[in-house]
Image (cartoon, rainbow, N blue to C red):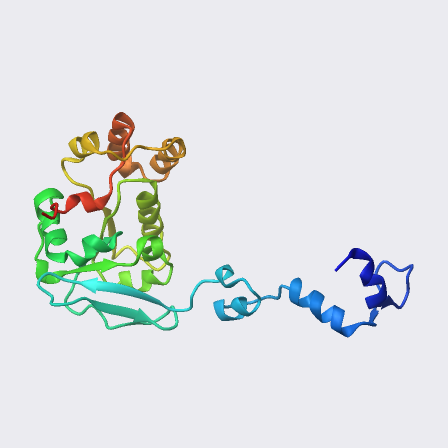
Length: 243
């Protein structure tokens, strides 16, 4: 469609006015124009946004959190259909360990043991759930309503800017009150692990570290080790190598 074709498609009621009504002279061409350049409305949910051709403009209504525990035969799931109510409740579980990567979630026994052997967390494992929210999806605002049912949330994420940002978002979730403590975990031998890492920091990540330290001073020791080694760490390295 060329620019001049609109002259034969639309007829203004007043050609001199800044704003005026128009009459559609060529409905077929006009409909083609609307299909090529759809009008963006005020979609208030993902489905409505999808009909406007931009589903990613709105978040999914509802959410899932994959759950595992030591010696479980298979994982379970907690679900919120409306971003308000979560079922089932974590009855009898006081602690939640969140991981960023599926491999650590699937190897639940090994991941949970890692808390005691390398992170100094020695709690009754019968009171611990392992949660996986697919990367930073664990930081969704509505997840805070589920997290608020726990006494303590342990965050065992990648030692990189992405993992730190997810931790920061969870810590600042408006649904979490003073009754729920959010704790960032890393191995007690993090300095030697970073020294052996093949995962280099990018220039942007070096810049990000300063901002992260300002917002989360409790992470400063880890960030200093990262700066010294010029490395970051993926949490899958906490697992034993498969033969």
